[in-house]
Amino acid sequence: MGIYSAQKDSATILAKYQRELAFCKLKKNEECSAKVLGNIAKLYGDYLDFSKSGEYYQKAISIAFRINDQELLAALYGEYGRVFYQMLDFPKAFEYYQKALDICERTGNKRGKIDLLKKSGELYYHLGEFEKALNRADEIIEIGNEIGDKKNTGYAFSWKGNILMMMGKYKESLKQYEESIIMQKELNDDRRLAVDYANVACEYQLLSNYETALEYHQKCYALLKKNKDRYIEMLYFKDMGGLIQNAPDKVLKKIGILSEKRYQTSLDYEAKALQIAEELGDTPQKTYILELMVSGYEKLGDFKKAYSLFQMLTKIKDEMTGQQIKAEIARKESQYFFDKKEAAEKMQNEKKQAQLKLRYGMVLFLFFMVAAAGFSLFYYTRMKKRKEKEIYVAHRQIMELEQEKMESELDQAKMEMKQFVSSLNEKNTLINKISDELRQHNYFQDEKKSAIQETLTEIKQSVILTDEDWKKFLSRFEKIYPDFISVIKTEYPKITAAELRYLMLVKIGFASREMADILGVSPNTVHVTWKRLREKFGFSRDESPQDILNRIKI
Image (cartoon, rainbow, N blue to C red):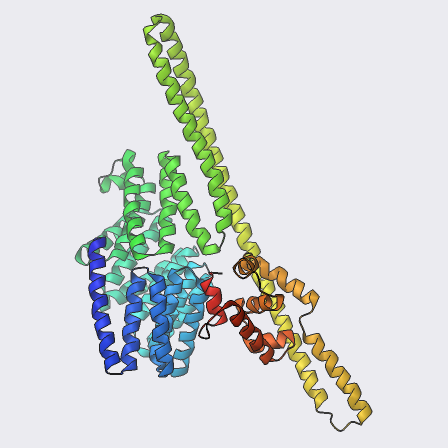
């Protein structure tokens, strides 16, 4: 389907939903309105308009919450989490998945729970937290067997195969795929069967068993011809491109590919896979495909194209890890290098043309000079290309090491922040307990009551976030959110220290009550700070503190 056709169809569907929504409102059926709003939100999400999608999901969630439809609310939370997943906002995705899971646990909705375990497990998988993803798959298998849901049980076996393959446990992985294939055949589910064939083929490629891998690719393609599916097409083209790039010549002969054409043919397959991944908005698959294409162009000797794709790959990975500034610096440095290379090659071409114009002079002398220049140019170009390749590889390794280092530092900062907040909460809990016990001694004489009152005052003061506590908190906070304070101060120059501190505590997820406990003030004081902040900068009553942070994109 072309882009125009897809847009035309989506416009038709959207108009249909809008008519349904108007009818629901006319009948004052709020459940119907919430469901239609959810459908509109999903439609916008499918076409990657995440802003509009989020807007409609919020409207639908508001109605579902108001009418207390827990099943509908869980479904909407799950779908909204999926939007954040597509936007690479993984903390928000987890937040909404967990909200939906809590509702399913509370209401005993096991089928809804399976769907959310799949979504959250998929997120763990793409973040590389394979043990957690395996736990999710095992939960799905347990619930699926309990309620007789063979479809999702088969899915979970296939998914476990993927996870174990990524962990390098190939024998265990193949066993899981075998279980899934048996179930898919029983269910006559050609789509899932094709996915399993594609995954088994990929695994045999990793084991360098290219002949068996080719057999499974052909099985997958046979099913694909019967039932067109863009996602499976993407898997097929991606993995076939990898096979063609690495398989022995005798395997390539079976599919009629000449060995000298292997890299270009492989890249043609990967280009098709990349196009589909972009259509589907599948960022993780897009990164795998780009890695294969970078490798293919390197082997083909086209380092300029390899670098261009490596830039694209680095940008996507940086968006997933929050290292955009470092990537921009690296891209500019590398761009300078390749611009310099291109200029040098252009200069050499101009020099060669100038030399050719001299052929009308002394023929014998010119012949000798051209021959000598040609030999020198060949040797120089060969050595230069080798050096350029070494520099390219070194730059790439440096970028990867810097990225790994920054990811490690960010993880450490997050862990320290969690431990620090936990220690503050433990301290405040202990202090509150002691305060309560001291208040209970009302039978003491006046002198003792006075002493107790002084002790209580000292305890309350110790609850307040001290200068030392604040310095530690600020240090860890800036490691996690390095641009937060500067962006806030630029956006709102008149903001006070207390108001800034309030927004920082909102950013890391504290509720008003928790802020009051940490700062040693009453919840009303925290509320007054928010009210003053709202009035000073003209925020509406309907906006929450988190809405303000979302609006300025920090």
